[in-house]
Image 1: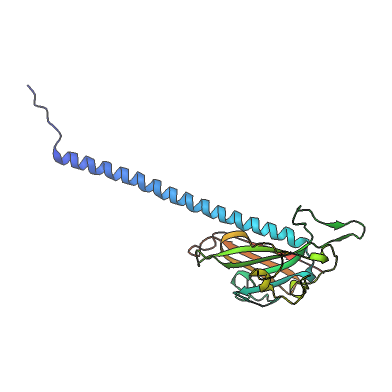
Image 2: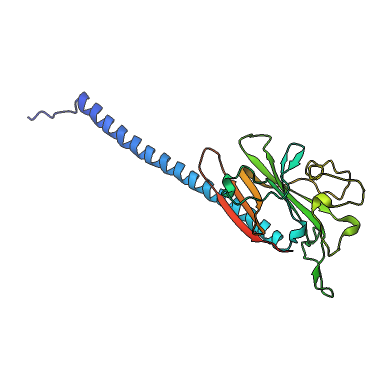
Length: 238
């Protein structure tokens, strides 16, 4: 009669340890892959946001007269650096670049149609489009890219153009660009503040000496380098 040898306690411990290491390795590979997927998905989402914003501005600015365009920097209630010109620094690293832009648009805000005078062969201006960034009230590491539209009132449909800081609205008086941005302009002709893009790290504008409008936007987290970025370079002529 043969005696069957059983499994010793040491063998059970060793087998359990090996099994535990295999399970841990599989779990580590899975979680690492999941994190990489999430990071890649977020990066793609940020890049898509930047491209959408850039394409929107590119479309609108192509229809705008250069004589109506103003780049500005708005910090709180102050507006400065109007039409700042500098080409010595790469735009996204230019501390003097502006964070806002305004220009006349021939797009009817109610229908989305371009208003064109076939008889005169000219675009007829409908609004001032104003884009700018402000700090995110929830997360001060980020910014929000906003827009407003200012109706031209009785001047709607005219073919001549003027920059926003020189525009005289129907309510009369002299107004700063900050009045439109902060919504203190006393008229219903100014649209509510609309969010164009969240999670913005930088959104910069600059008019350079070549009569070009430069725009740079980076969307994502400041903890990561260039999660999403896109630059447009538009030539505007009077």
